[in-house]
Structures are given as C-alpha cells and as structure tokens.
Image (tube, rainbow, N blue to C red; front, side, top):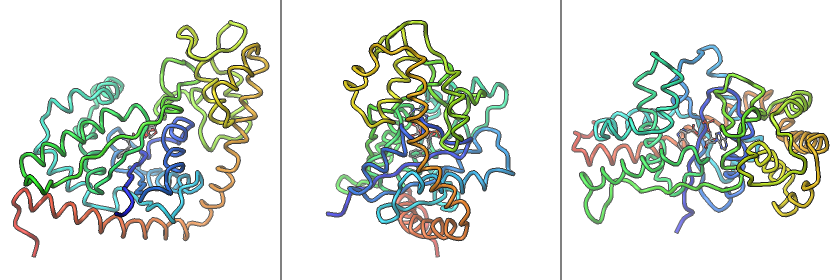
Length: 336
Ligand code: AMP
Ligand code: TRP
C-alpha cells in the first residue's frame, strides 16, 4: 500500500496571513511526511471576484515561495499552479452539468461573498465550490486539510463524487474517490484583530485586521498595539464575552508552541500592557525564519519556476488519468 494522498491549496487573492498559516499551511507541513502531498496555488479561484491582471502572476509566485518558506518539502510534496493543469477547468464543466443549482445557492461562503459584491456577482463565484471539487477529486485525495470555513465545500465535493459514482460508476468500480476533510482544532479559526467575532480574512478592507506573513516587525508591532481588546484585567480563554481575549491567547499559545494550560497560568494575572509586547515578540520570532527563507526564494526565480514546472508535469499526469476516467464513465468518444 502506498501513502495516502493529501491535497490542498490557497487562493491568490491578497496576501497570506496568520489564519492561512495556522489554519492551513502549518498543518500541511506537520503531516507531510506521512502522505503523498499535492499542494497548489488556486489562481483559477482568484478570478471569481474582480482581480488585477498586473499582480496575478507575481502573487502566484509569492504563494508558491511561501509554501516552501513555511516548510513544504519537495521530498514529500508536489507544488503546482492550478491554471497550469487544464484538467481542473475541464472537469469543472463536466461537474457543472451534474451538480444541482440549489446545492451551490446554499453555500455559506457564496452568500457572504455575494453580499459584498453587490450587483457584480459572477457565475464563477457561484461555481467556485464545483471547481474546488474538481481540484480535489482529480487527485483522488484521501484527505483535504483546510480551515473550518472550507468544511461545507468539502461536503459538497463528497456529494458530487457520490452522485457521479451512483449514476455513472459500477458497484465495485467507483469513478471517484470520496475524500475526507482534515480540520485541526487549534488555529482552525483565527479571528480578526479588529473584531474577535469575525475571522481574519484577506478580503477585509482593513490591513489592521490581520497579520500578514510578510509583515515587517514594525508593522506587526503596530497592529498588535492597536488591536481590539477589552477593559477586563486578567486574561482567560473561552469566555464568550471576551472573543478578542480568547483569540489573542490562542495565537500566543500556537506561536509560542505552549499548551493551553501553560498559557492560562502564565497570563491569568496579566493586563494587556504586559501581554501585547509578549505576543508581538513571539509573533515576530515565529515569522522571522519564514520571511528570511521567502526572500531568498523569491530572488531565485529560475529555481522557483523549475519547481512549478516539475509540479505541473507530475500533477498533469495524475489529473489527466482521472479526467479520462470520468469522461469514459460519462460515455464520451475517446480522444484520437
Ligand atoms: P483563503 O484565504 O480563503 O484562500 O484560505 C486558504 C486556507 O486558509 C483555507 O484552508 C482556509 O480554511 C484557511 N484560512 C483562511 N482564513 C483563516 C482563518 N482566519 N483562520 C483559520 N484558517 C483560515
Ligand atoms: N477555496 C479554498 C480557500 O479559499 C482554496 C482551495 C481551492 C482549496 N481549491 C481547493 C482548498 C481544494 C483545498 C482543496 O481556502
């Protein structure tokens, strides 16, 4: 038996932040040795909301370099760009014709994003989860490690796969493998620095609401200094009245590599004036090695592009096999 397969990706919209790192990338790195990993840059998803062509290619390289800088290891992982493997788009079309419209209209993220877009909601935004299903099912992924916000999309992916297997598969030969989500509790939902009840997000118009992985120490200091807190003295976890306090303590726990019990004891008598510098120092120290690796990698474009080219070739060979199998199951005349 070979290793089980893991697949995940992040969209190229905006800069990666602590939520992306703690909710996603860090978890991929932690488990990578046990699996055969496919990690991609979701640049097709990036144009589901209005995008800037001038920065798309650079953002794509930045995210790929950050994957490596955060510790994704090419010995265990294939890193590639979604738009370089055309099977993603093609399988999306086939899935589109099999996915009921009302499955997509129910998606929480669509509803939230659609409100923000006002009149300007593209068909692509509604179709986003179908593309995501294609991403996952093309690679016959066993596990999809994501943050909590993506759980509903993985459930939809499973529903699409089950529907195709039921309609077009044979009993003993399913067309598609059914994946499982992998959602870690710690870091699964990093909240905004400006409002502890909203998640930290690339699309929040205020940069003060998030710490980006490439933020300079000064910026980190400023953001933590100004972040929202409360007037209560003594810091504690899990108080529903104190979402900001809970979020900042969680961040500190994970970034310092401590246990919740240790941090609860350490911070129970602290005020914000004492805690904020501690969190600032810990955050800067945790991001420093990632940043210095990143700047090295982004300078070496030849190397980075060669990684993505190799990734493209490997990903394509796996993806095209699945695509052919689905087309065959749907009854298409094979290519000549
Ligand atoms: P996105 O920024 O929406 O492209 O998300 C990329 C990955 O990061 C997904 O696995 C998300 O679940 C995860 N993620 C995004 N924001 C957060 C957050 N605030 N807390 C935890 N995970 C997050
Ligand atoms: N939609 C995901 C996000 O915003 C990114 C993504 C696209 C993804 N395709 C995927 C994640 C497939 C996991 C598997 O986070």
